[in-house]
Image (cartoon, rainbow, N blue to C red; front, top):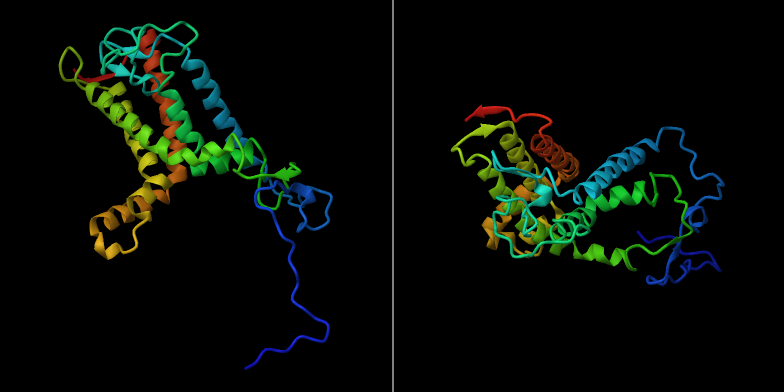
Length: 288
């Protein structure tokens, strides 16, 4: 059945050409938006989710920003507890016994934090994560803060300019962070074998739980899923990689949950080790 021919004088609409490299108009000035002066007509509490995100991420950023400059209370020698924020500790400034991989770096001046090499990797992996990008774009930058809510910015350039070009390095942060996670796993195992012999304490269990959650976050990463099987053209020719891809795909569906829970677990683990090392509390020993 043929389609109805166009009326005389009718023609297909001509769409304006768009320069992808140029910043686009956004916010209430976006060309396709209805002419409404208000940012939104929504009456629900759409602002609650970005507010919670700002609060939780803000607390974590403030806490870690202060913590990495502290040179005490990151190591419990009696039970071999080392906080993941300082692992591995590679400087002669590190507490005796806390450098499981040696100290290839000399003593550091007071204004250089001990984890100055590892913290940028951990922060970079989180900051360039696809989920976290969505979270802080919507909350800190309000771009946009919620569905059907216009953003306050008048221009939009996406991730085509510095510093957001760094977001493309996420896969490289994934490799580096995975190496650090292997070291964190080694630290968690050592927590069961202090100098006094085998033992189990609340701290060692917290370290294991934290490592497990971090593995869940890393393995559910979009880059990990792509590396495993994203570029395969024929799954049937790579059955093992396909099986791994299906498992990681299931984890990937829970990536947001792993992102938040592992973020909290890192802070809880560090707080516990800080409290035990400072003498505020005693480690609850279960065995040994």
